[in-house]
Length: 530
Ligand code: MSP
Image 1 (cartoon, protein in one colour):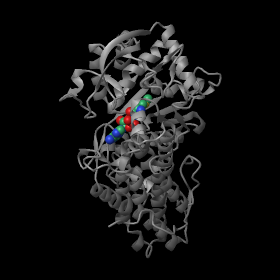
Image 2: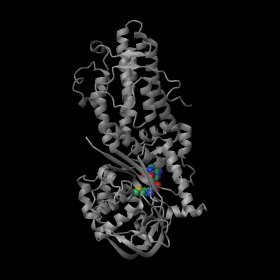
Image 3: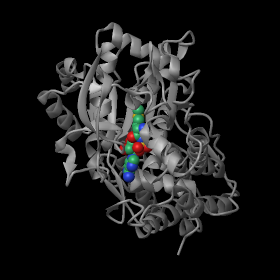
Image 4: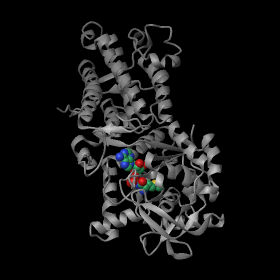
């Protein structure tokens, strides 16, 4: 069992307000942070997000908007913070690279460490700078003279910069990634970076002339140069913990990071430059980097010219935060690109949330309210045995010692404890969030089938005892589902617990719940949308 969990999102550029891609990264991180808080002490989880406010991109956007840079950035940062709040993002901190007290000292401290290691030198090489990437790119990255990712012409820049000896570290990083000391997930990305490291990487420019890029952090001892935006940005993972300052308790407690979540476009910075910087500074490397794909809209890259940009504020306003979180986590595999369309959204909303989860919970709660005055307690095991759960989790049969041979199945609590939970935890550990949700919804479908199998609405007329066993089992199932979905749908999870009278702050009690007291909700959890 892990003792602490430090998880980060990338810090977002503040040249515009947040888009759906940013939301995706942040929701993934939030789900994993919430999940780890269920498994380890809350104060041992640290979930960091923030904003990347320097660099040419932000300056250009402010100029274009005709605004003062600081004002422009502050406005955009406020939008990120507002969106995270709307989505119930549970970050423990929000780091801004413009924070001179908190961020800058660490960046300059780290720079000095690299310098002490002999890894910073002055050089002058011409290069092609892509503002979209905020990086020097090579001819290989060009299509028709434009950056492949940003469809922009790079600028030819020849200036005196400080360089970082990345080349010295490629051979050192390679085995660490190969043997999973630094895990890269998924495997395809691991192979991609290994191939790159094998080729060897060139040293990178680590500063820009301050006369061109003044909105940034000065190189220690040379105010004529500004620290390169990626060196500045990557350091956020340390500055938020107070590394290199007197207030470094968090650093001692949380470093190294357990998981950096990044999109595929920026994973090379995280899997090559960042580990090299850490090795140079003699710091432990992060344990893992999860690389996710891109979200497209209607199969195409979201772009203003195509007019298919999904505004996350509008989406949340129309669909509700929980439904948006659900879509991002369930409809898209973190390891591949995923698509967003309104039709697909509606289908998932109505199918999984309104007709699936919402309907199930309200049916079970209503039957308990009607037939048992809203209070139902655990029946004797001998009675439970009369209404076994005839599940068909064939794929989980290997986990199942007891039901394997018993065609008639076992109880719902047994199934949850021995089949669903272990498999769910395994999927979450492997970051297969969409599959974990699929498992839960498969379980919900089986619970629906249980209702069909025993028909409590008819059974109540002939056998009260058996009906109690069926409905108690179903309530147990609903409450267990609430626990499993809480990292994804925190509000809905809590609402379900409330409906069944189960406190939401504690972990599930050992041995599960004995009694449920129903409070019928005033509104349905997910009203159907047509
Ligand atoms: N500022 C840098 C990161 C520095 S981290 C030390 C940056 N910022 S960004 O705002 O451009 O991107 C932030 C994250 O959003 C990245 O992980 C990126 O992959 C993700 N996304 C941007 N567009 C995306 C989609 N369309 N889909 C999914 N995620 C995408 O890069």
